[in-house]
Length: 209
Image (cartoon, rainbow, N blue to C red; front, side, top):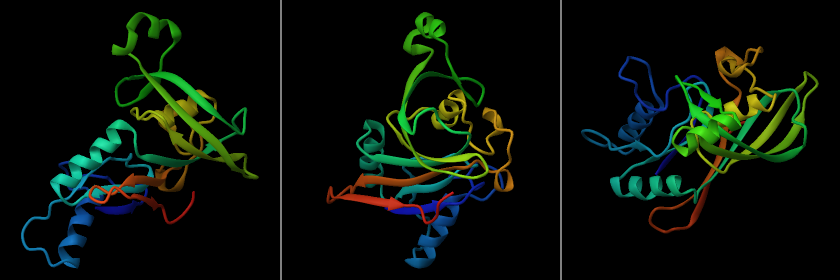
């Protein structure tokens, strides 16, 4: 395995353009660090949005990739995020449950009528738990978030629907810029079982928002 702390505005994986990616940088690191000849096997176990930052886990063998992606799929890993949002949630901690529709590179919270008519084929259940870490004099709140489901843009869409968009996330209604056009969302820690020893390992980001 290789875990990396991705900065804001860097792609997780190559996009077929000349833009740099964390995967390309990580492959170069492995090639130089371990004097690997030829191509380096390295695959992302999961991805985070380009505008976000934080922990990305890579598998260095196909066997590790299979075992680690299965943990991501079945939810046996533990992902903790941090988000800097505008305003303050109605409670200091709680559960958000919504139904999301993937629509044109955006997640949309569906109404009860849409959910009733379309069922699970059109809208997917999304749940997360949040906890207030701190409030700031500028009116922002720092939240810790644990995903219970893993939907497209789930955190961004659910917090915006709750009235607290993530700072810098203009796609979901934020009116405030963040650093260099980034979004104030971080994958802060990941706990996963080692693919061989089955021992739990936690990777943590090096900084806070």
